Length: 250
Image (cartoon, rainbow, N blue to C red; front, top):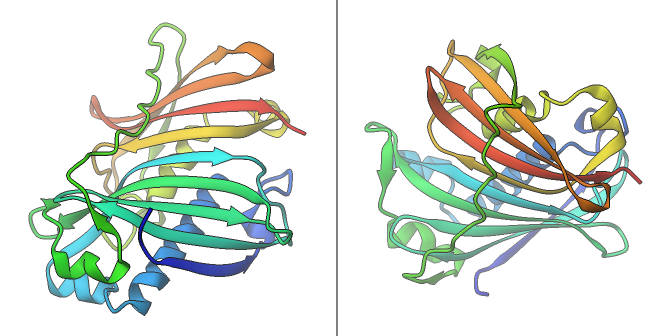
């Protein structure tokens, strides 16, 4: 695995946690993106350089594997590494360690560059990725596909996209999808279960003012685990799909 490793220490704040005092996945993903952004700036290829070229990073998929979700007031170390890239896709790994050096969370992600004006994916310029030291590979990394929602048993919630849901790219921030996905589950379930694995794939942008439907179906697995399948839909179009494997909270 090639690519320069960037490391950042972070103390977990109360507002980054849920009612069980454990860090939320959506907040952890936000902080990871901030860390990768810091690396980009330190290498001289920050957002301002991309904007000059009419480009912006977009996230296509996350695969999150949780050994233990860190809790309030813990100090964690987040590492990030751009591992490989091809003409259209860039692959990056994040890892979270506790103060004893134990691995808590691993996130594998797929990024692409968007032409801001055309709102379409753009080829990856060599000068943008060269500073990261990652290797070029024609091989596509096949990330796990999210499970499909069961139409017969699914539950659905509606949300109107608010101003604070959108980011500087003028579309819904990726962390909001995670919140919409998880909000289809009730308080009792969320406080008695923990995420073991989550796969989330972003298909199409969601914009300010749109009405979204967050749909979910649930299947019980062996050893007391539960698999939930999710999708975010606007006007009959699937914007995002996800699946989460849950285990009983420790």
